[in-house]
Image (cartoon, rainbow, N blue to C red; front, top):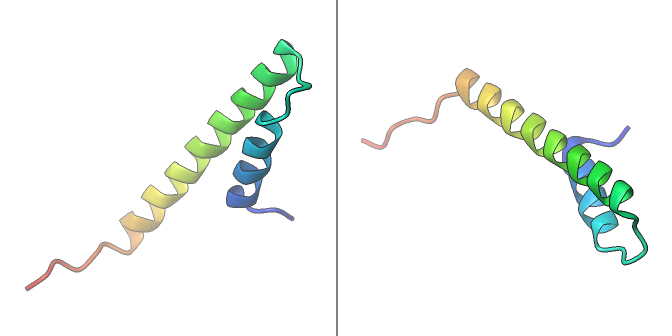
Length: 56
């Protein structure tokens, strides 16, 4: 199973392909935006559980 980071990297790599139709490119961009949002939500959740210690 791939994690979100790997998925994001794979989608970014796919976007570099010159041989994508407009429809394919739009689909990949939607998938990438969704994966980035999911990664951000996960990061916020983790940070909420483990707040950073403030420096003394």
